[in-house]
Image (cartoon, rainbow, N blue to C red; front, side):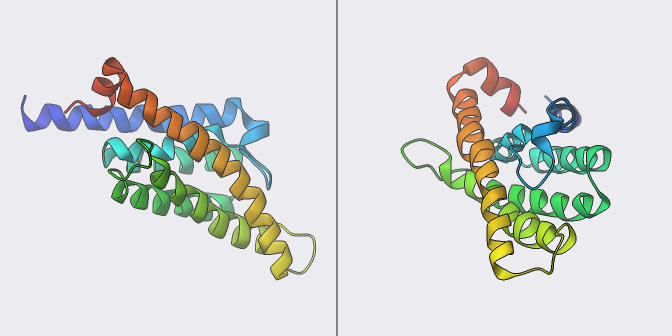
Length: 174
């Protein structure tokens, strides 16, 4: 197979993941936006375990989902959190705990807790003056949603793909 067709496959995977991220966020809108959220599409933040092209796909999907369903502030900071999380997840792609991609699930949790929870929500969406307690509370609420989305659903998604030959071929074939 030549280099051009490999690039096309990666580009298509990138676009499909971006589109699926947006669709999941919009269809599950009550759960996808707000201070307390379980954004199911965030499970895709673990896909960089299978290739760097997923960094672009997930980040683009997050950007578009925030553009269509959230605020300009979230477009900037939420997308930044997702990009940084995907970059670090990619670096942790080969690290496993008992065969599970648990370490790769932690960057989305941590970056979203800090950037979206402690910073974005506290400083841009609070009704009162920001406090350390408010920042900690917001970080924890965002973190809980991210643990559900990434550490539970995302790790399960990676395990499903890794143990199913047909899915593994779809997600990793050059």
